[in-house]
Every structure is written in structure tokens, then in C-alpha cells.
Length: 136
Image (cartoon, rainbow, N blue to C red; front, side, top):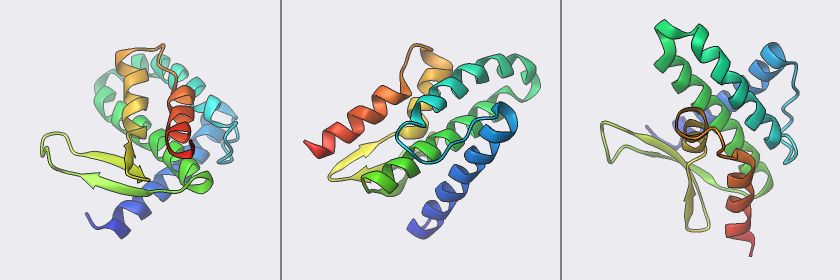
């Protein structure tokens, strides 16, 4: 996947997140720093939807994590900067990361962490740490 393709995909996915938030939860995602707290809420609410999506559970998880991760990354890019990277070094688990100032951030990955590993994971705190790590 080229740089242009991954950037376009993530921009489009972030816009999908904006539409999804409005349609499903009547939330307005506006790429502000304050809106990151709504992503945490949406991931919690998605836990309930997982029970409704039994036949398509893995697809649902993939779409939600990538869509909301794209939103987080695009918000970061708009306020701080960065460039999307497609890491296919592990062909069984390719990853999309946002790179900035010599660091990479796994925004889709932190969404997966909250949704599937530890519901107490804070996407907002991860975002704040990502900002602090490059602005100190």
C-alpha cells in the first residue's frame, strides 16, 4: 500500500467515524481534542453491540477499531502532525500506525485494546500521552 493510499484510506475512515457517531449515537465528532472522550464512550457502547453481531463479531471489531483509530489519528494529525504508515512486516498482522517526530502511535491498536483486552484502557489518556511525548 502506498503512502498516498494509506493516507486516503485513513482520512476516509475518519470521516466514516464521524458519520457513524452521528447516526448510531447522536454524537458530533469534530476533530477537536475534547471529542476524544467520545471515542472512549463509543468503544464502551460497542461492547454491547458485539453481542448483537455474533456472526460477524471479528468484522465488527476490525471495522470499529480501524474507523475510530483513524479518527484519533486524523485528530492528532490536524493538531500535532504526523504521517500514516502501513506496517506489513508481520504478514499475519499488518498494522497501521501514525508516525511523528521519530515515534509511532497505534491508534487503531489502542481501540482494540479497550474493546477486546481491557475495558479500563483510556483512549483519551493514550492520546494525551502521544501528544505529551512529542511536545515536551
